[in-house]
Length: 95
Image (cartoon, rainbow, N blue to C red; front, side, top):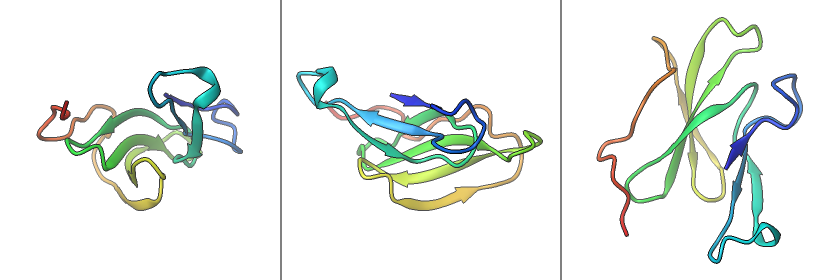
């Protein structure tokens, strides 16, 4: 799950919460992967990286954050164009 607890106003933004099987609310672990107003999270095919759309403080441009999964370590960012819609290739996850 990905949310912005501080409503894109600074503070905790882009909080990724992982619920391991059997998917109980009590077992969820959270890590902050965002910067300002984060959404649109995708995993790569190996479930080792996560990508999320973020935007600058003024909301004038969007970019893609790349983080390791599940620990959320920064791996870079992609700027240029409009990062509102994206996918990872291959776009199927292993079983």
